[in-house]
Length: 273
Image (cartoon, rainbow, N blue to C red):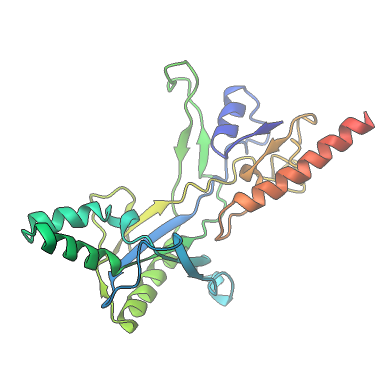
């Protein structure tokens, strides 16, 4: 049994020459595409107190809109703009360098600013695509001589349409609650993309899935519903890499459930043998 993330498992398989006849090992790499938006509320909202996220918007996972764009869920963050801008450190730099504040005035200004920060993250579904993949090349090895994983990944237009929709919606939300929208995307940032004339920065969620995708036949998948390799009956590839789609939720509970089911299968095989 190999239990690992959806990057390391295919790397090991490909480096070992066990890529499979159908060529799907390492393909269908998925991750959540994140669009971050942030604003300053007119009054303190208790940012930095309590959990990382206080709640979310779950209503946009399914519906007729799926014919045009991907599913999405929004998390309402309670940790200020840290993910988006590096706050509160960047706020401190700004208040000192740009506003020339110090002492009690600096302290009060920093507390006021940080306590009013709100961030909405938009976690967008990315469908499985064989061109999104993990591969290896003998020319790329680490200091120990192991083949490095080569990541090829592109966010499709189907998901970018959801990014555009999400940006429009978050603008409306901020306007309704009287917040000042500070969201901006720079071409110098990693993940910058222009879509239909609008600028965005798409971030990854590190929620890797796919790469040894499960299915009902050996021609279109790498493992069966028990995460057993079609071509190597005594080999189980366990984890989020078996997932056939990623949806809009973290992969942890799904991969845990898959691994528990696979463990039961392995125990059953051992008892029978």
